[in-house]
Length: 510
Figure 1 (cartoon, rainbow, N blue to C red):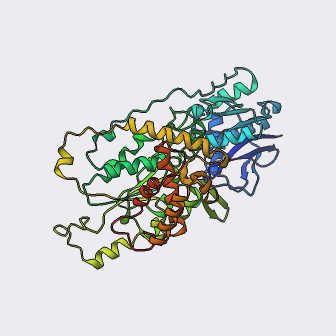
Figure 2 (figure 1 turned 90 degrees about the vertical axis):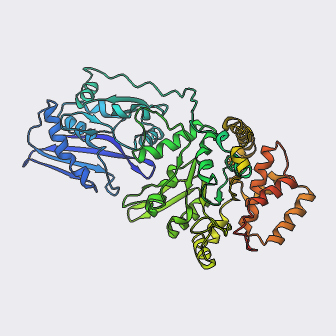
Figure 3 (figure 1 turned 180 degrees about the vertical axis):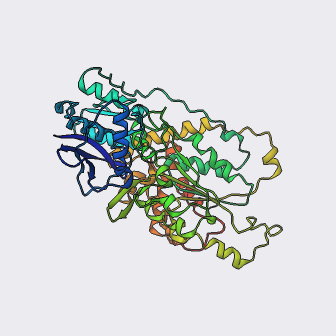
């Protein structure tokens, strides 16, 4: 007899439908699986036979052929154990064939018949919804993740017998209630009020988050660069529902999703060590998976000690920073991962870290130049803002001044985000850092005075086209924080000051 069951697999962070076909016929007993299968999928034959036996289903020895189609798509993982088992039972006559229509199944089987959770459920279930599949049977551990998808009935099973009883009608499972996003208030142990002094650095951090601009801190050790960076999540607005769904897909594909959480509800803050490989940062592998830049999607990627990273690793981020996505090509196809993140970096001005304090710095001029050359001009030009951080003095560190709290700063950023969302909605973008060059003049609404100032700045500092556009985007964000409908001269001059660090002012670009 012949039967078929719908299942799914991953292609990057998107789902694909896979048809599991089973044929049972007379002949020499064998269990043959075909369809461009990885080794872990081929091993399913042993898991399936043992799970069926231990679940009480007798499979007479016959010629069994399992095909996973389409044949030109490589199948990986253990998600096909459950559909293979159900297709086989239907071919043997245990389950009516009509009960398998318009039902998608995913799950790994243990040898005793338990259904185990798998990664990448959300993209597959969401793709099934787009293909008008109304029912999905999946592992109990993945129920919360899948329940965020509307218009699909989700049935979660703890073991194989539950699935068979449901399909035969002897004991139906109840569909999982759809996930309802409740009010989520994130609490942080750190706060911006703990940072003494460093007014310019905190102001730059506020502007960067308000417009999702890339930001570079440059200064000596102990000045507070990492301290400010680690508190940036405390001033970021919460994710929208659509952003949570897209981010959850990425974490689901990487197997990093908390099974007790239906959605990723915190903006990510990723801080990889400088020993990270290019594949781990950008994404890759024989079958590519998202890297750190994709895990930081809609959040922050913090590269501390930037110049300690391998130069080629840093340079590989240039294209993803501009495009908001990264495409990785392999023989079996191309994989595109989203990576719309805010890049935050911190670095020292020299190998020892103390330049220009010559009482402490012992680096020679060639050593400093060689050290700074690890950050190329094209990569530096992609930083919207660069801040030269100064060492704290005694009065700043031990003074009585009351600093602003994270909540106060966050409220201003939420207001600025709301203004940007309304203004940029016709362009299909959310933040000022994404404003297309053709729309920048209209959005900035410059008067003659500001136009003349922009021209003078461009000519005096020999800016690149990218650098000039980034200054205006940052100026637009500063104007939004200032509740100004148009960009004024003081906004442009402040944005310019964040491009003019002490060490990189070379007469070209900086």
